[in-house]
Length: 457
Ligand SMILES: Cc1cc2nc3c(=O)[nH]c(=O)nc-3n(C[C@H](O)[C@H](O)[C@H](O)COP(=O)(O)OP(=O)(O)OC[C@H]3O[C@@H](n4cnc5c(N)ncnc54)[C@H](O)[C@@H]3O)c2cc1C
Image (cartoon, rainbow, N blue to C red; front, side, top):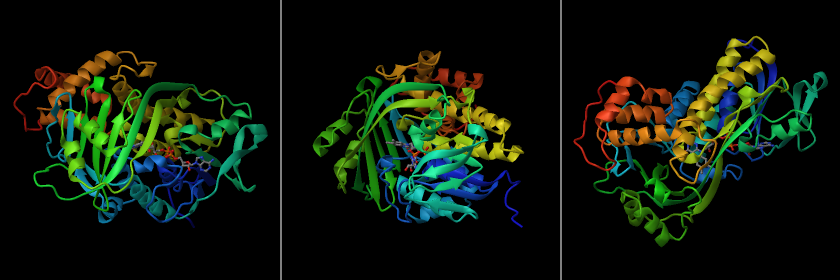
């Protein structure tokens, strides 16, 4: 007898999309279905290499605390495996040089430790664990192109593949990313798309890898230098396995980072801190720069959908696709999968109640990440779309939080917990915390004595 999981909700589930959201979804589904099939357009090899349909894999990716904790819970030992494969063990406060509003944040050591690595290494490692789960099959090189329905179109009972075959399923999970391919299939059957919020930021990445060598005096493992909002410029340097740095230069609101190395260096030098520029100047490039344009944050309000077929869900970027500068996409996808796992645990059948419950509860982690990302993007004057009420006031306060985090370890840690999605944004608004921030209220860039104690706020 198969004793996996709390209880069975169906025979088979199909996940379309084997990127981070699809892989995390497969993990939780495997507790409740005898057979879980994950299909993806791209060939899914064991190699660590970027995939054509996940082009963002060539750019810096930070796995936030929320994401790494969920992965370790689902796949015990995975973090050690990543370290063994060359990922850098990294304290999100202690090892992270973050420069913003005229100064670097303090760097107290914390328990917020996780791996930094390339996206292909992370994805290949997670994929290996998912492929080893009992009942899970990964099918690379397979494109889904439609659905099979039952109950006169009221329920999804299968997925049509582009080779003409069909996969039966009790539940279809669409993890096809921002495009949410199944919405087009459902539209042909008369189902409306969920209401969607869009906030346009027009972010451009240009990234390149460099040979990583010891540099005397460097006491950080990763750096983010964020120029003043008017400059619309940022730079990241993250360590990748294989003794590499990846340096991402980022422009916001249509600012396009250059690809020529001399111009890249000037771009990095134009920021308030020279640390990323110095690293580039001292390191040998290993490849050609590669660019990516992200136009808009997009959130599908699945919680407001009135009509949808049973046996169908969206997850990951298909629900909410966020400006990558905030580094939340993979962790938010993992949080959505964790939500799906909880709803499956609590459900008795794949009925309307199950679907509604999932759509309603998945909106919670999504709303938190959306408020951080969209709020952060409205710092830039050219960002357009519906601005949540109070954003300008909140952003003025967030400037104060950042300035306080340049001096106060406790503020820095709390800020890191919220940015790492392990605390909700409301934790930055508790009376004790606000008072602590306001005690440091001074103009951005003004220096003040540093508080090394983490305290309690
Ligand atoms: C430049 C950049 C930098 C980023 N940096 C970070 C970061 O630092 N930290 C972070 O957490 N996130 C980051 N992200 C976001 C992150 O990449 C995504 O949020 C994450 O990949 C989750 O997306 P997903 O799995 O929902 O979809 P995707 O990653 O878009 O994957 C969708 C998958 O579906 C497959 N697919 C699509 N249609 C079909 C079909 N019809 N049949 C079969 N397969 C199909 C595709 O082949 C693909 O594998 C970044 C994104 C970008 C663009």
